[in-house]
Length: 425
Ligand code: GLU
Image 1 (cartoon, rainbow, N blue to C red):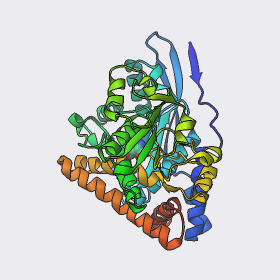
Image 2: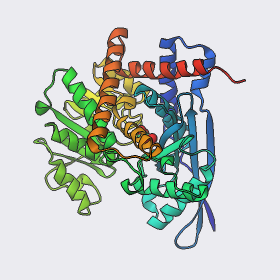
Image 3: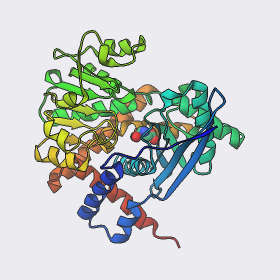
Image 4: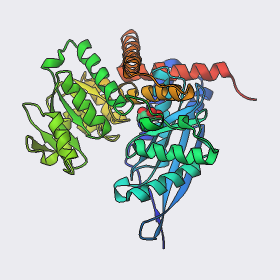
């Protein structure tokens, strides 16, 4: 029996509308010509694949997979693999575009890409997930490689997924190619510090924003939406810096404590086997919408995209929004937050720590070398703080929001690279 697992119709406004709206704005500010705008609005390559999977009970199902390379002007394509039921070509295209800007903003020599499969990985056994990942990898084999396109973890994937991608690629090559993916296990050439890198970057950006607005972290509060690799560790790092985290949430809902949550024990609650943070004994249940509207200094959306819509943005009471997720704010939501004077540290800056350490991992792989933790941590901090300062200066000089400034810098760098390379033939 064969069943085709169709990707669901995506929510409006789609991530792609968001990404193109932001690009149009940056292109206008940079006065880019129409040819360049059209080049940047569309991906360089997009591959859609069918991924047949033999389930453990013998049935065959077919899943939709994608790999999109948005732009290669500044270097090999770079970006994660997302396994989530909402994955579709438009979403992956938007995410690939954001990767191009993210790499340009933090000045690492990569273009942007993204890939994924429309699947709920929690519905599969470990063996099924391995077979699905390997078959998907073999379908996108012509596109990937350490000098071509380097996948990494994203929503629904982790270092084990990367190990399977690396092994499948290496078996086909006939030798080990650690540099084909980043976010690998350390035993296979992964970098120290990669697992927590996105969250490290989010907390570095959040603390920079608190400092710039004259706030002392020890007197600040935060709410974090999402308690996966990014959200849970961001909550932990913010706590370590003295910030009181009042609420966190995951797919099952949220938990709230007005005196501050003990993040270490919330994390232990999950590792002890609880399915969600909701039943955490020292917190009261809270819904996602109420969490986004909490009266806190910092709001960190670190789950999926499109959550800060026009309506939700009107309810936000945080002074600063730090985007741990990719694309959490819709264009309408963004306008409301800007009107209300809420500082938004945009995704391509706030969550760039992951790809920053991916770059360091790739450099170590290419050199067959490994660096100590302090070197990685210092480079990560430098990349995020320097990009934050550049975006803040541009925002001030041009009188625009931090998001628009980050986009102007990033799109400008990619446009310069395209112009300097010229058009072939
Ligand atoms: N998936 C992460 C992101 O969205 C990391 C990508 C990478 O390291 O290539 O930035």
